[in-house]
Amino acid sequence: MIEDQLTPVITEVREAHCFDEKALDGYLSKNMSGYEGALKVWQFEGGQSNPTFLLESGESRYVLRKKPPGELLPKAHAVEREFKVMDALRESEVPVPDVRVLCQDENIIGTPFYVMEHVEGRVSREASLPEMSPSERGSIYDSMNDILAKLHRTDFASVGLGKFGKAGEYIPRQVALWIKQYRAAQTEVIPAMEALVEFLPKRIPSEDLTAIAHGDYRLENTVLHPSEPRIVAILDWELCTLGHPLADLAYNTMPYRLPEGEENSFGGLDLELLGIPTEEDYVRSYASRAGRGEIVDWPFYQVFAQFRLAAICQGVYKRGLQGNASSDHALERGAKAKMLAETGWQIAQEKMDA
Image 1 (cartoon, one colour):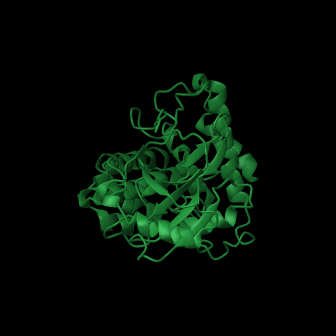
Image 2 (cartoon, rainbow, N blue to C red):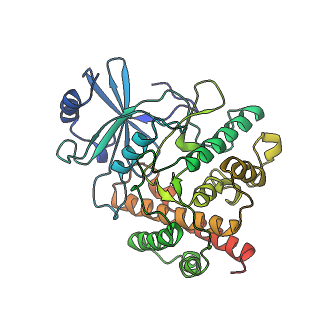
Image 3 (spheres, rainbow, N blue to C red):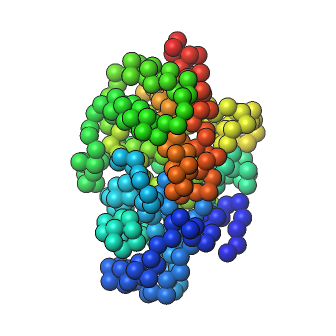
């Protein structure tokens, strides 16, 4: 298969993620309309949580997402939730792939899984979009901003997600959850992480909003139109829930806060020359589209975003040590927990008088 910088990397199925392809073929033949058989399976590189596979059947292409093998952290790798939210959003303003079938029977391929249509397009793993022109970068970031605001404006009850999560008190619950998840995956003492574990529960803002929160909203989890500078699909809904929209926005803007030299950091880049909006302009555009005024307590949400991703990376790292991570780069990527914690603690000290 031909690969370039914007073509998702596809490999042979890695040994740790092999499953019974004949059993899958039989299941799809009985349960998915239009399936033609003659199944071929490939694995996508990237994505540190749920292994993702390209299925080829005749002239049709699908994508399968499954839970990883081995012992898993509580409530993690929720492919069932991914399926539910994309199914709910299929008629909304938020572009999502068309989901086809959900299988919760572990006896078919060893774990629950779902299958969705393959969306033709491009995927950029670099936030700076080096392959694009300044005008194209600006258009893509504007598209990403617009879709996030549309997601947060979507009436979650009217699309069938009224019981998708608890309404209200998202931040307190998330702080407690990620402290717990971090402890479950901890392999060493990270001083900055310990400081954040102590600091965050004491500084939670009073504003309590509820919206559909993607949970991992970043450029890499979007599909760009094959030739136009706009987004045609949002992927990777595993962490989606009813949550605080500003937590989603803070996570989305993390490239502005990552240290210079780190992967997907805007540090040291001339954003104006690149055509990428400043953080202030990006947040202002979102606020206008979301129909809200000034965003208060913004530094808290930035700190929380760093802490939460540090906890996620620690889980990736531990799975890498155990040998059941969904990417060969799990140890490398998971080791970023310390950097993220230190970045978050620095923001807390500089912006919040920690």
